[in-house]
Image (tube, rainbow, N blue to C red; front, side, top):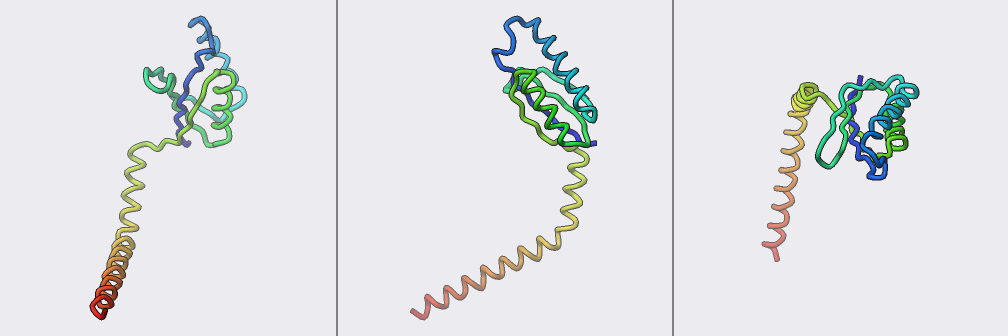
Length: 131
């Protein structure tokens, strides 16, 4: 399953009494569970920074992730930003595989580009000398 992070900022007008927030959160959760069955909630965090809530979810269906974010925005009175997330070890393995696959191609491309610059510079210098 793919992992996503949903960053949410709750509107100051979302509730007037902090005790109302729990009811809003329960409504949003119930709506997502009923309309986005492929979305599995892994973790939720309250933060004291730019975002109020950070949710970590998993899903095979990006459309259901988008729908979950829309539900959070509309029923949770929030703005959201959704990010696909890759586990660190998977990221490193992918980076190493790319490096191994492309090392020779990158080396050849760099050598070719360098040689092209040298040739162009040599032509420029020889043209300038003739003037």
